[in-house]
Length: 628
Image 1: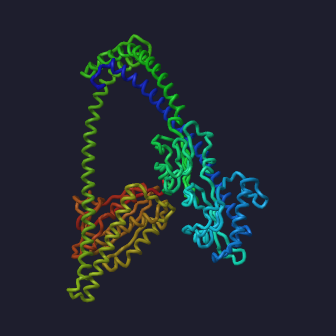
Image 2: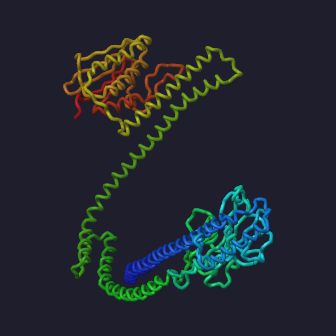
């Protein structure tokens, strides 16, 4: 859309966008950042409140467990018979004892029951025998009743047991129940169970505090079945009647290690901020929530103020942009018209701006630019010709690269095919391979494996040389000793080929700062090629002291190289003057001379050759004695 607009409206809209968009962005950023911080602080406050309630609940249940243990440890209760054969006298004494204890609890604690507090809201104490019969109860109407005794085995293994919060099946009242097993004081066997029950409102006393929760905040507890076991602030008669199905409750009982939900819908379907904590011993979930609307009320007021201030600023920006547009657009349009003329090739055009600001500088720069463009255009044409030449050179290099890849593939394929054929014949059980044939096939395979290894090593050496990754280990070396060492290395092979190998030096000692191993490698490549291509005659290795340089030469009486091939000698995979052989595996890799050339040049030297067909070949290289 902006492309079709003229400069004046485009300038106006651009400045408006540049001014207003950051303002809107900053306002929105501040709003959402403040909202996130407020959310985090609110959740942190809810978490503190929730942890406080959880600690209070755990302390309360621990107190009840201690009370149950204290009751189960009294002398009278431990008189219960482990076989369930309790005498009427024992039962009556037990009934009197728990009624006395219950009466004392409701009044003032006795010294021997000091751990049972007055405001404990204990509503019932009950004692069952080993068969599940109620033999003593503060509610005498329940004495003699029998219940399914499903808790006894748990008590035997776990001790004090927290039954939880449920409706009593005998009275239909809602209780919080703690159980403790009773052991006979003589035999130590389990003989019964003590039940300590508290009214439902005991948990409400813990969760009812509204401090720090505002108008809509509340704390409630949900059991494993999803039923609320404390009174709701907003729903009447919620205990064990209100089924809470929220994202927070599902997460609380899921046992996952993911991040808990902080914003979700509560049991009323309203968006709230909340935290929750699972009590594994009781299998409860303690939830503390507050309405999201109330929690974010401060940031909502902040947002409204931002809207008012931003609206005023936008009106001011629109006015300033309009004024600025009048001052900037006219000079720019003048420069635009002049640029059209320059585009047509008129480099004599000039502009003038009646001001002393940056637009005046722009106008002056434009005038200078038009002067430069004329001379630059001619220069670009010349450079374009040069680029075309470079393009052709790059094309040739690309063709050379393709040719090199093709040669490498061909050189690797030949020995691989020979190895494959030899191994296939060895593995073919239908053929009668004698020991002599097997030996010959293995020898051929080994020769070609050696050739592959040599070729790969040479390629690696050549790539390192071309990449400049080879470092020379320069030392002060007597070049004459290098000549002797190379001749000795090839002495046996030369005798086998009936070739005389000799060395010659201008003096007994020619010292130079070189990498001994690299120079030896150059000599070995040159002498090795000479032996390979020389059917008879001699090979001479020599060195001459040329003041600050050393001139080395390897001369042979071989077949020589034609003038047409001289320019290709140091190329990759180039092989000339091979003796006619039936086994191609003895051929070289065609990389030795390329490597030799690279090693000599690394020493700051030069290598070249002279050859005549039917007479022989001379390879010569020269390098400085000292590093420059």
